[in-house]
Picture 1: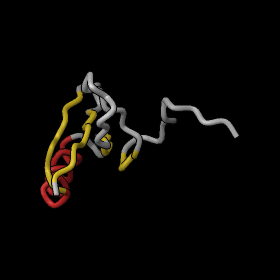
Picture 2: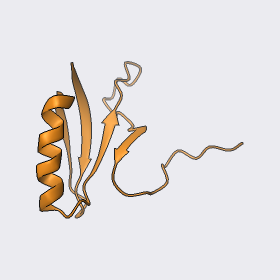
Picture 3: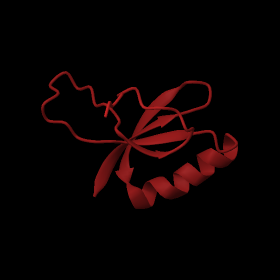
Picture 4: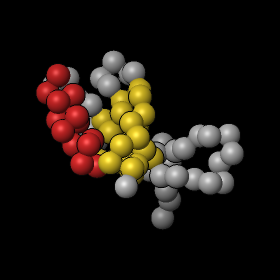
Length: 74
C-alpha cells in the first residue's frame, strides 16, 4: 500500500514521497545519514474533503520536537 509522506530537509526544502513504507525506510535512512538525522518526515493523510489539494500533516513520524501548528485546548 502506498502512502504520501512530506519530507522536510534542514534547509527548509520540502518534497513529497508517494511510496510504500518498505520503500521509504531505506531511502529515509540514506537521507538521514546525509543530513545528520535532521530530516523530518510526516505521514500525510488523504483528505477527500480538500478539493484544493492541500493535505495537512497530522501524524509526526520523526524529526524535531516542535509543536504542531494545530493547538489543542483542554
